[in-house]
Figure 1 (tube, rainbow, N blue to C red):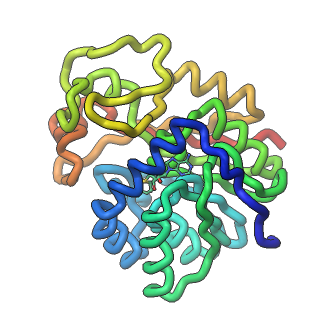
Figure 2 (figure 1 turned 180 degrees about the vertical axis):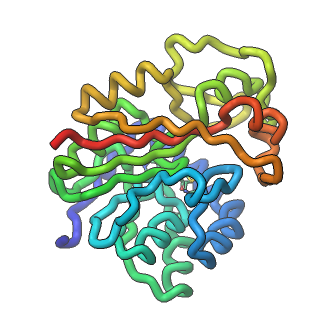
Length: 263
Ligand SMILES: C[S@@+](CC[C@H](N)C(=O)[O-])C[C@H]1O[C@@H](n2cnc3c(N)ncnc32)[C@H](O)[C@@H]1O
């Protein structure tokens, strides 16, 4: 694929806020990025659930052009490259991309990563076989913008996989920063979309399951699977501020959507 064109420099307010926030958070993601880049064992999410248990990726991605929307340190793209795919990363944070580029050089891989908003990219229509996002655009970009963009970017029959927090988790987390999910509903389910936590400048997006299904269908996708991830009894996480293991063993703390663009 030829090198892409210019990304739109005009950022919607939530994208500008998230750029500033992720440049601040980036240093907290360096160590985890280094660990993920150093292994070929693919695992997912805050509980590091092995791909061999959940099969979120297509069996064979070799030769696939895949775009990772919100790639961060780009270890997912690195895993895909090691499996024979041709990844392209897009991320909104210069600081995150600095780590991605350093780790790429360190591990002898070479794929394009671009600074830009995943909601609006300059790539041509139907230029990718797969779109992936692990906690990237999946929650930091507006689904009503990035899902149409993902659909535009995919060839007919192309695959989409994204992983994000479950609505149940978002409904039960207290407003105050850094407190894990509770067993009490804290906010309405109907109408959930844009979410900001007390004392935090970043903007997240979470929508109900029915809204995801409608949005995906309206943008030419067939939903193949909704995988509600359950950690094993031995799982650990550094994100104890999001959910305890006891909680996540009983309710889904995160979920992966797998969809295919209609041929
Ligand atoms: C948690 S990281 C995801 C990367 C990696 N999979 C991980 O779990 O660490 C979230 C990333 O999404 C990026 N991001 C947020 N909003 C974005 C947007 N509108 N377009 C592209 N990337 C975005 C952030 O800059 C950040 O690097």
